Structure formats: structure tokens, C-alpha cells
Amino acid sequence: MSRQFPSVIEDLFKTRKPVVGVIHVGALPGTPASALSVDELIELAVREAARYRDGGVDGLMVENMHDVPYLRGGVGPEIVAAMAVVARAVKAEAGLPVGVQILAGANLESIAVAHAAGLDYVRVEAYAFAHVADEGLIQSSAAELLRFRRKIGAEGVRVWADVKKKHSSHAITADVSLGETCAAVEFMRGDAVIVSGSATGEPPRAADVKEAGLHCRLPVLLGSGVTPENVAEFFDAADGFIVGSYFKEGGLWSNTVDAARVRRMVEAVRELGTGELGGVRGASQPAATEI
Picture (cartoon, rainbow, N blue to C red):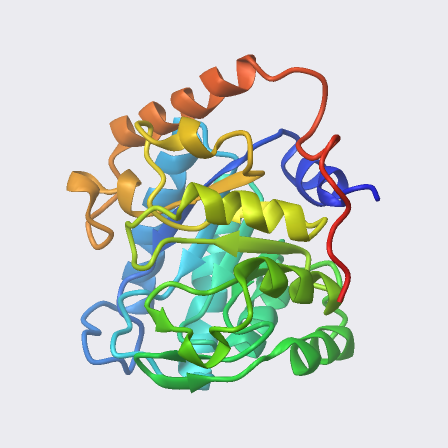
């Protein structure tokens, strides 16, 4: 059973093992911490996009993490409008593949923003199975999300789905393994799975990353806690790295991007990639589990 990630990942990024830098957009209009105009938010995001691009990352992710506390499962038109113009400016500046995530679980809105801004992918939570987040119960979104994507003609926007998402309780699905969740994402036509640690800045367990790859044919991306010091532990089992906290000054997600940290991380991944032999991950792995 062949794996799908050569076309999904390599065709998009033109490289194996892409490094994706996260831009945490400042607090958006109407949110409790909002203090800047949309023009000022764009200026800051574009500045970080240029810093990431010059540091050699392969792609970017735009996220509204400063909008705490987050709404559950949807956001208002003011957030959609602001994220669309910020993300479009980031895409124009960086000239790289760019994606978006809108918290918490505002997956339809993420697809709409990606389509309007000409982005390439979205990061979504609760794609398959529900979980309990700080905001409350987040329900599975796959069926509604893919129908909405088809309705607005956004089939070119890829869906990257978190599995056993960080900052959440998964007691209600304790009898469903991470691997089974990954298999469900594939069955429900997702484009990639994201494995993270328990919280922002916390690395996943190496065993979880390997389990994900054994249970689905989709790309397995790491979604938190990756650093130059630990990336070698995950390199063989992962197909890409979404990095936020490490790239910021002092390793704190809410700070601005540190150019030296970006270069250090990119160089660490490139050095590991130099030693790769003969093709992509999974060539000798067992077939994915069907559900």
C-alpha cells in the first residue's frame, strides 16, 4: 500500500521534511487583548514572514493564538475578515506555502480564510472524534468541513488534522488509540495528521509519532516542541515540522521571531536530511490499518 505524502508534501514544498514557521498574529479586533489596528497587525505579521523566509523555512502557518480566551467552534466575521487580509499579506511577502489555523476549532472559517487569501492548507482540530478543550466539548468536523470546502470551490486547500490534540482531555476517547485516530483521519479524507505534545512548546512522544506513521498513509507532521536539540529523535518517523515556540525570542510563543533561532533550526533539519538514503519514509513499513 503506497503512501500519499510524496504528492501531498513534496509537491507542495519541493523538499522532504519541510520546516513550517508559525506566525502568531496579534490579538484581533473585538478580542479581550486587542490593542492594534488591522494595518499594524499586518505590518507585524509581514515582518515576521520576511524573517522566516530569510531564515530558510519551507512554509508558514498563520494562527490567532493571541485571541484568548477562544470562542468554541466558530468566530465572528470580524475575525475572518482580519485573518484573511493578514494571511494574504503574509503569503505575498513570503512567497512560500502558507496555511492558517483559527482557534478554537473554527475550522470552517479557516477554510474560508485560506480560500480567500490564496493559502495552501489549514490546521484543524477535532477533525475525527471529539475531545474536551478549555473551551468545552469540540465535536468532529470532517463531514461538514469537506462539504463546505467543496461548496466554495476550495478543494485545493489541504486539511492537516490534529490527533489527540494538545491542551485537551481525551478521556471520552480513551479506548481509541492515537493510531486509530490517524486511520480515521485518512478514512475521512484528511490530507495530513499532526502529532503534538500535551501543551504548546512540549514535544510529542517519539512512540506516538511512530504509531501515527504505522496506522495511516498520510504525512505525519510534528505540531509542537521541536528544537534543534531533539529533532533527530523524530526525524526518521516524521514528514515535516511545524515550529512556533522555539522560533521566538527566549523560546516563548508570544514573543517575536528570533532570526538566529530560525537559522539554527533549519540548519539542524538540513544536516539530518543530508544523511537520508533512498527515498521517502515508509517504503518498508507495513500497510496502514483500515477502519
